[in-house]
Length: 476
Image 1 (tube, helix red, strand yellow):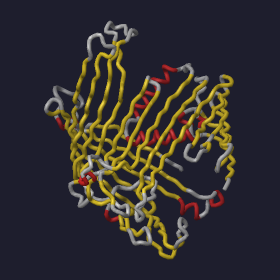
Image 2: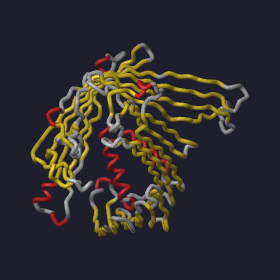
Image 3: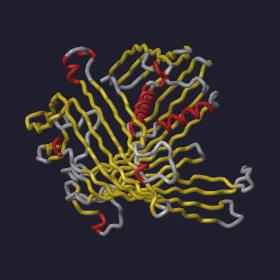
Image 4: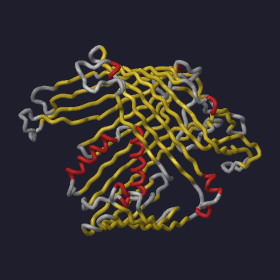
């Protein structure tokens, strides 16, 4: 993957005067920004390097996004936020898929499978949407008896209602494609499989709705020196539901409901949960039909299609440069609040996870992170009517400790309870060479085993200056 780049223009206010006098006009609050992402990728065997097959495997994609928005207060307690978002996608490949009844199906051994060919060139796709949202915050307080250790519980509700419209600008590159021998078809894009995604098909004109909640509690605390002897405890950082209703769709107007909850216990244990509810019924073959579940007389928002819960915590020794790093991380988080910058940050985090030996912190003598995840899926297989319920559990841990102020040993591993086996494991040794970091990474077992040796510059401007030698071993 090279080169990847992110371009961001912070929000500018073209109608805002250089010197503000009095209350700003509504048009002076109009803000325009730009986010751009460039991606390049190629998957090929090393024996094909420099050959035509390598060039055939290359993909280039770029996404441009120009959001225009502003917000104004209305009716004192409400905020009205109109907005327009324009996105454009650039591709260098188009994927053509057709059903081939004579092609062997590797999954079943029968004949009949999708054939995929590609066409090289320069292709574009566009997406535009307009929206107007109205939001507010409602507060409720329950006060306990004067001598109770629990003083009060506060509930904050933040309902959001918005209307949006998105015309169908993608119909020219979506086609109905047969995907099984029974003749069933589904909509597929010529750009499915591209590295920057593809706009969604169809026109949307409808209503989006959401409700976010927050619960806090005040309790008696002797440690409080203000005289009130009170301490705030967050019971739930957030919990709520989101969905939409498409007024212009000919069927399945109501979307699935996304539910979520998150909290932090004792400022140490992060807990998050999420799930999706499908409000539509299914027929005997397992296909969705345009009838809501509550039309059967059931009191239910829908069928739970998937859900997950995760817990994580971390322990570490005192950081020798803790205050300075906290200020640096705060500035990074504030600077990376935009979507494009957030995507770049996620790619950086993925690089850190893949190469932990190159990003160790020698100022922390020891550290350990623990996480646990539980996922549930309830999938109906079309044509058979069978229901597949699957539960996966995974626990992961990673940590390191310093042998000396300049040497550090670390381990990333986990356990897969579904397959009852040790998951991906990476061991590393790092050495601080002042301006450079030396790291030795070892993946000792699994399908893909690897040994690598890396020397990389520490300076951010020279982060791509590195020497890497690696050996990989594959077990079938």
